[in-house]
Image 1 (cartoon, rainbow, N blue to C red):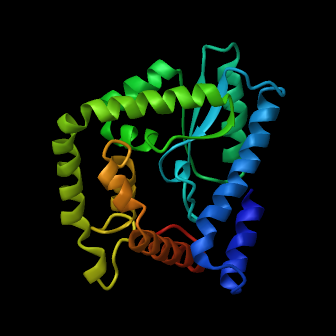
Image 2 (image 1 turned 90 degrees about the vertical axis):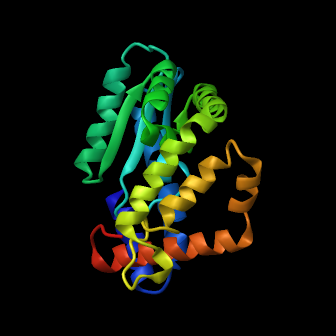
Image 3 (image 1 turned 90 degrees about the horizontal axis):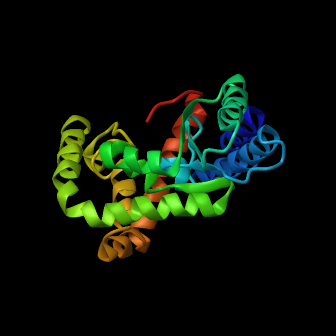
Length: 234
C-alpha cells in the first residue's frame, strides 16, 4: 500500500496525475488493499463482520498524509478481536497512520449519541468490505438518530464551528490558510455534506456545481502540498 501511495505521489510530482484526482485514486487503492486484509484475517468468511470507513475516508477521499479511519463492525462473532488485530497490525507494519475501533451496532450508535465528532464521522460511514447488511443498518440507524436530534444538536455544532473559525481564520482571505480547518475549508464542506443527511436543501446546495468545483480545488491544493512536502500539513 505504501508503494502504491508513493507511485501516485510520483505521478502528481511528474505531472502525470492531476492532484485533484489523487484523493479518490488513493482511497480506491486503499479499499482494494483493505478488502484483501479482511479476507485473509477472517479466513475468507466475513459474515457478521463489516470493515467500514468513516470521516473523510468514508466520503471516498484520502490525501497523501491522511489517516485510515476505520471501524470493524461485528455481531458478537467469535474471534472478532483476532480479526481486528490481524488487520490493524498489517496497517501499522506498513507505516500507514490508522484511527481504528471495533464496535457492535449498538456500541456504534452509543458512541454517535455521546460524541459529536464521532457522530459526524459515522454519518460518512461507507462499507469497504464484508457484511453489507450490517454496515447499512448501522449507517441508517446513525442517520435516523441524527435527523431526530438535529435541532437539539445544532447549538453544539455551531459552537464547535465558531471556535474553529476563530482559531483558523477564513480560507479565502489568508495567504497561508489551513485548507482543512479554516472557514470555507474541507471541514466545513464535510459538515455541509452530513447536514444534508437531515436537511434536503443543504444536500442540494452541497451538490451544486460551484461547491463541487471549490471542493475539488481545495483537495487538489492539499494533495499537491503533501506530495511536494513529503509529509503531513494543511
